[in-house]
Image 1: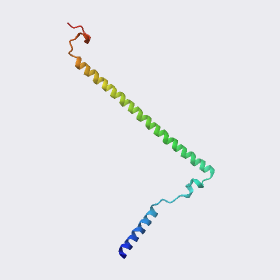
Image 2: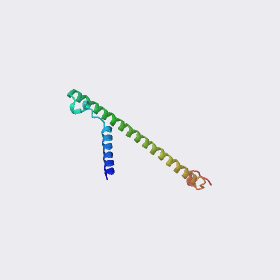
Image 3: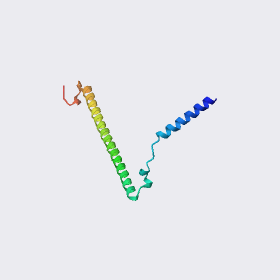
Image 4: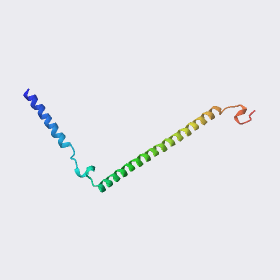
Length: 105
């Protein structure tokens, strides 16, 4: 009983020590609540610029995907049209009726 209690206590101590050493140290100099008004405005401006860049990159990625999808749709439509034309020509290749465009007798 003592052994299991001591091993449980040792496990808990190791877990607490590992968690405490793995946690990042809080940098009070970077805390936005402790910044002067000028530093805070610079910090907020930098955050807005990063957000604007991120939005611009997302918009560019979205537009590129839309262009690629439109190109794929156009390519598939052209392929479908060519296949339909080839099918129609193959079906009417040996047609002897007068409506094919030649007045054969």
